[in-house]
Image (cartoon, rainbow, N blue to C red; front, side, top):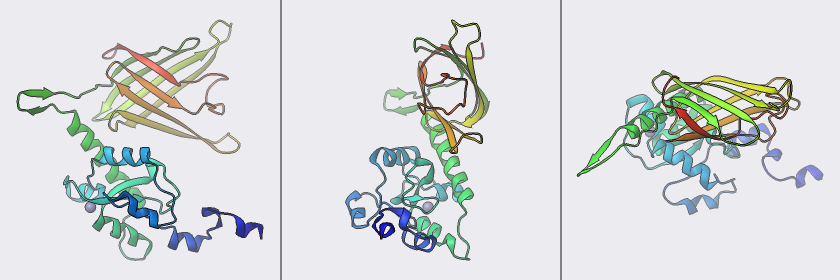
Length: 260
Ligand SMILES: [Zn+2]
């Protein structure tokens, strides 16, 4: 009795999920049409992120054909669970490729998750590259480049943090950082960041599954570059990812342009 009163995907058994919770989707431009489905709608800010990062180019069209035509299409859930509206799980696809992606659960040739993720990443890199190039229209030249390499210092009072950003391959950044809490004490608590990630648009995301955290915790840092600095966002409680009270969250200003 109690179980039947529960709502949401927790009542789905695996078979139901494969069938009724399968990728759906969001038709463009009529956002109202999806209201007919009893599904969890992609939040508007996430939808915006997916559409802007793809600039409405289909990730599979691009991955297979380098086709950058603007498409009418849909936002698909990569893992097939429409309740998972994390932007990492979403991809903008043309109608044709969305249908083909749907067929992946059959034994026929479908697209694999890893494959589509790779195409999406390649598309985001290409889009972000293209949008960095100067655009000349009439007499006006617009140069959007925000170049992320350099040294950054956190401006937040009371704790110290620095982040160093270096380009290691086209659009691939090496990011290292150091943060301290309690520098007035003999032994301050410290934390370090050291990872490589692709620049996507103006941002970089880093995730790390912490094996020692109970329950399982994934540390996630999102860095958004500005022309004169960066913003780093992470969970308020990092579950011991760094030393006690140590965090990298905050607003940083750029201290230098290059490797200094
Ligand atoms: Zn396509």
